Image (cartoon, rainbow, N blue to C red; front, side):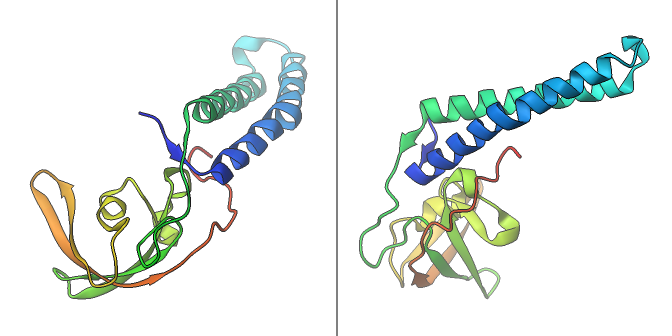
Length: 167
């Protein structure tokens, strides 16, 4: 599966990748060299910790390279009056008789604690492209779904916050 990302997502990943390669990697290599100098590597916790951190950074670099290489660039724009990327949507959950507000974002920026819902999530899929007043079913899995009514759409913009997944 290819990840659908905005041009801004890709740019932020490139910036992180450059930082990890040019700043973090040399520091981590130096930390491994210093820890190796402490002696017996079989009982050297500092060496093991430094190697682990270097490997973690290298793994993140490979992940970012792969994401950038395989990304499908999508537009942030949506039709007037419909739910699009970065819009804040107020939903009435009929089952619970309550309103919730969430922001529809790309997978790289999802954060449930901040009310950011991925466009690939059940809620994101259900409301993307819909209008105020539409009643849609959020299909959680094959056996469970619930209905929501779109009460309001606040057009949003990319807040420029770095991708959250993988940190």
